[in-house]
Length: 195
Length: 277
Image (cartoon, rainbow over all chains, first blue to last red; front, side):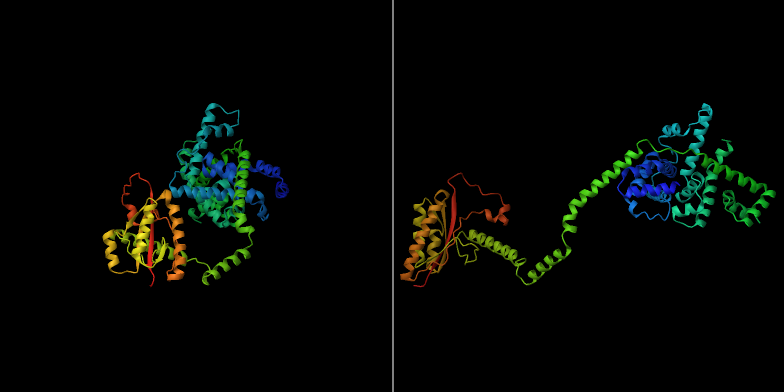
């Protein structure tokens, strides 16, 4: 149903209805932004890349062939942008926010911790856990980070991950296994603390 | 099956992606292997940690930012089009190619003075500069032998000495004077019975044009005389000569010669040519 709606909006965009593209943005902005944020671990960079992904999608809408869903296509665009960004960081030896992974930390927490039943201690505990996990994810080599985020956060099927990243399902399986092992290693202390 | 093999399948097992056979193998192994069960637990916990991360929402100005970017890029693209299109797209390529071909043909047919003109000019300029420097070094207006690109004036006369005297007197009547040849040099040159002599005069700039007018009259008179006496005026080109045109010469690098604030004189060079008597 959602895909059908997407196609209808895309047709309206192609016909020059800019409002239709706004609706597409509003439909996918949180998913795309969250993905960029989890891949990059940096709020401003994530915003920049996610917005750029929508701009590129808008500009390439005419060439969108509907071979995959709009959502998959959009994910592919933002993923490639984030991959390039991560590559440029590794080339320039810029640290990938491992020690200080969550910029705009407060605003994020205020957005995500919406459960009013948590006690202050639980809020702190939750915050610490999120920081540790985000830090561990940010520390993964990008090829493992991608599959871990797509599978364990976005819960995408292997086939779709392979389609977005542009590799085989076998590669997704092996990278996911390796990525999870590395992540478990990094989160060993957290698990032992019983957080 | 050994633990290593089982552990390599745990990730897929967790996701339910194992085939029936492998799934049974893993489950059978886990029943008896505490180590592999522990592996599976920690793996499950790791996945649940990642899964528990809350979704981060896009900032409230997200859509506005996208609209701004799209508009900005559209503006840049339209400006780019306006700059480039008239030249590269609107002009038919065939027309451009034809025009280019015509120029190429003309160039090789030497119909356009692409290469020769400037070279000759440069050469002449150099020769002219050289001549003047040489003349100045000698202090005498010896011949430029028609090497001057723009001879100030060539005047055919029956007798060099007579012509020189006439010009000298005429210069003085206009407040000017003879610069060269100097009297001693004049005698020497006359003794050599040369057929040509460069005469340099200095005429006040205020009366320069009248002087030239008078020269014109003289030439006409001489021309009339020529009809009878076979004198001839060879060429008439008059130029108020100043040193400014030679700024590219090495002299230009030397400190400027101090020139007192007296009435400004313009230098005129006249080539006297003795015709056959």
